[in-house]
Length: 264
Ligand code: CAA
Image (cartoon, rainbow, N blue to C red):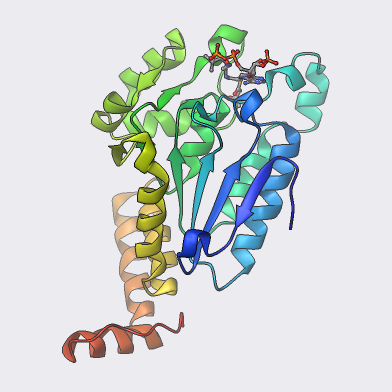
């Protein structure tokens, strides 16, 4: 399938089971227009329904930006009533994130600002290039984050730092983002995609149902009390013991061989 604003590849660069989506509006620093949303929604739906694909990497084209935010030119003349009546930005969280049960990684290669930072934070984790810059600069435009920045950034890096970033609109460099636990690691820009695809390939090689379950459990930690989360964790563990992949995984360990997964 071809798209106007993104490139979607399966089994990317020879990595079996790994999809790659590249935001492809480099002249606009990959700004997130409504066409990008439509294209991403479609591509993620394709990923979700394709059992052969087990992990996905999202990155930006060009060396400057992952995404420099929602498309300001598209928003500048839009009447407030339309933002409200269209529930503007709602599909970013409901379509792209909630319906994606399989793992995905954001490979941030430059600016990740406003909606770009928010989109990266929707991923299961972020790997950053050494020139990555994160920020929620919406205050400079007379608005505030609208795709989860005030909530996800605060959960990721804590209130003080998130508050300072939202109030000043300053950008956080890659090293600071790693220290603040916003990203898992920083790699040289030239190595970013290879690193992210290799990590995705590792995830894609694991039992796929267990991968979905592990993701569901970690995400539940943000939604539940400790007691509720511990119960959910035990129940999912117990359910997984009924899977064919549990039989295979434990047999493979004992027989000192690689597991052959069925995803069931
Ligand atoms: N929307 C639309 N176009 C954008 C854009 C955006 N968010 N960010 C950059 N562009 C465009 C620029 O208008 C410019 O286009 P032209 O060549 O046609 O003028 C092109 O991309 C290159 O940008 P710059 O010339 O500005 O590049 P720079 O290197 O001088 O600066 C930058 C880079 C600091 C990232 C700067 O582009 C910038 O500040 N961008 C806006 C960042 C921002 O405010 N993001 C938040 C948007 S609101 C939002 O996201 C709300 C939300 O919560 C979802």
